Length: 158
Image (cartoon, rainbow, N blue to C red; front, side, top):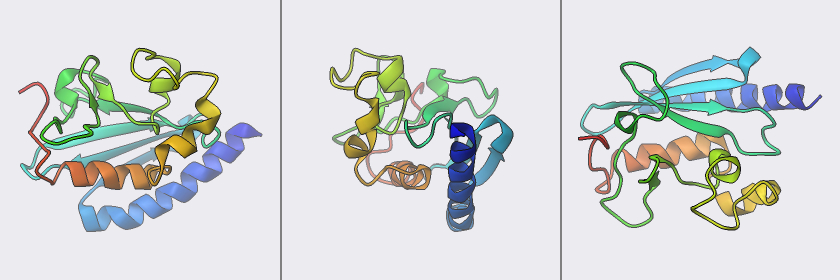
């Protein structure tokens, strides 16, 4: 039952994302049977960035977000990440690197050194923490802004 709900939500959100994709130049690749959504965005310096959302138990829990190397599709390598440390409230967790946001399940279940109150016991409150960015499309808009504003510093590994 939960899987069907997650898939239905992912299909609905994918429709919204595909409508925005034309405006922003995103490439949207859903794999509904795997509960995966991969989106490629382009930064202001024409660098591509690939974000994968794994949506098991969505939206009772946030998606697990992985940045993929645009050349190799390898997850989590430093080269996969953008550097938005040019301003306050960076999305980048530098020690990982990783996307540090309440919308990322990874920070509730796998990384516990960042926010003491983000853990398996508090994951049910993720929407309260995520604020406006509590949908995949909302989170993508946040990343899109970061890739085009003054905070953007290029690719993380460079």
